Image 1: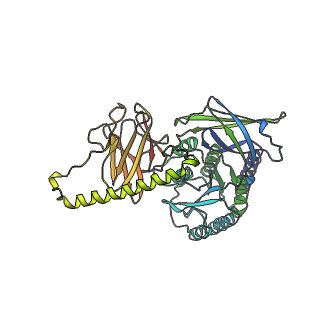
Image 2: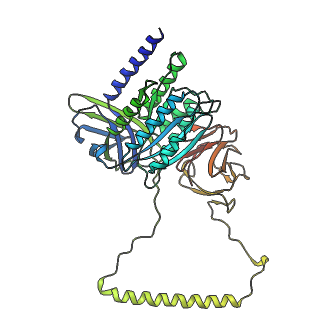
Image 3: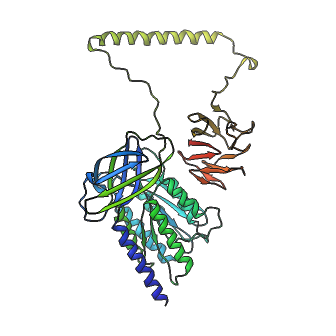
Length: 468
């Protein structure tokens, strides 16, 4: 009976795999309005033309102007390897995982980067994004099963958060690769509902490898089912693995990632207002029609503030320009010398005579030391307003006058609503038992929740984009 259950589970998962490969899967999107890049998988051996696609973003139609296989784009993938280091893994399985990850690194392209997160009793960023294969190999080689708990859901939240990181040089496309039985037995406060909600709003595809050691019970079946649902919702894939041959499952996931297509579109009417918009994609070749879509939050783009461009002078005026510049430089240094001599001749002011200029209207001064945090109101009464807050160790947000950031124009915000803390180089948020709660990227938080640049903090009806 036990072997029949194993056979039945393998058969069901095998059928699921076959169905997943033979469909349209919208994997991920990268927005830089008015342009968007979409990555997708299509049925194998299907002739693809850009005229076969129809895309809309919210209520706005988009124009498709290019479709090409991902391997021909000269773009990379930012891989996030999420590794279980709990003792639920047998030693030979961990050896297989390490061997598979080493092989994955060998197959990475010149534009790929990878990061490593481990989860057990705690979640640890063992290696941030890097192209350094030696450092990645070393981090993988140090993996060891040592914890008694499995904080899978917390690990997935951290991986999604890392997958949203925007930094120069990082590939736009991301992929979370995780092997698990889908069971989270930690005593922490992260629920699977929080992972589903975060994944729904900020799409970072999860390529999960599910394994279950016989005997198969209801808890293991439910764990694998949840893992498959998370993968599908996120735009990734679920592959069932033989616990004794994990290498094949990793290779299958690598193929699914690299066989994707990149679709480039323009949406001139789209607005980056921080609101969720539904991206809808339909493909049809006249005989078959496939559709997929997901909701995505269109965040405002960072705009570099610079000086307006000044056109160069005409060639006939070049000589005069050089002469005027030289005279101006000479006058500047002469004036500087006179001012310096004048100041030497003046007595130093006493402490009573010294004054300190007040901060700007939207600047909340806390301490010269600490982390400089920018909070931009993207939704609410003060939409568009920008606050600058220095978080030395902790800072409170709320309606009370003694809060470090006073938000008294929103009646749904509590007097002491949210606490920001800066410890060990990391910024986190905690709800202070407020009436309406604190949400990060649409997910209610209960304990200290790590923040990343670009996260959205919702207090009452006021939504703040966090930058630091």
